[in-house]
Image 1 (spheres, helix red, strand yellow):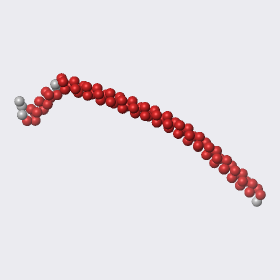
Image 2 (cartoon, one colour; image 1 turned 90 degrees about the horizontal axis):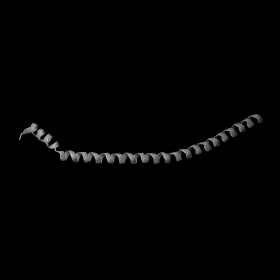
Image 3 (tube, one colour; image 1 turned 90 degrees about the vertical axis):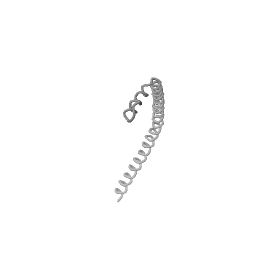
Image 4 (cartoon, helix red, strand yellow; image 1 turned 120 degrees about the vertical axis):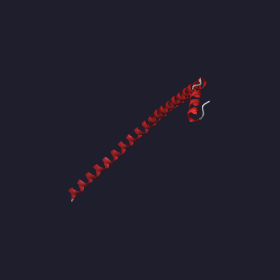
Length: 90
């Protein structure tokens, strides 16, 4: 048995080549892959749901923008017409 740092490194390398440990490592990596796929699938589902809810808010915002835009346009035209009437009278 070797002593010191080199000996410990050699023993660690030998221990890591044990087939049982490699099998366990392979299973752990497989589990990690499944968890990752589940996580990214959940993220994709959440993104789709967010896009759908955002779409309805976007539609509402466009509608309100058109309504308020029309109101501002009507008020501006009314004020412009009122100013023309006042300047014509004066």
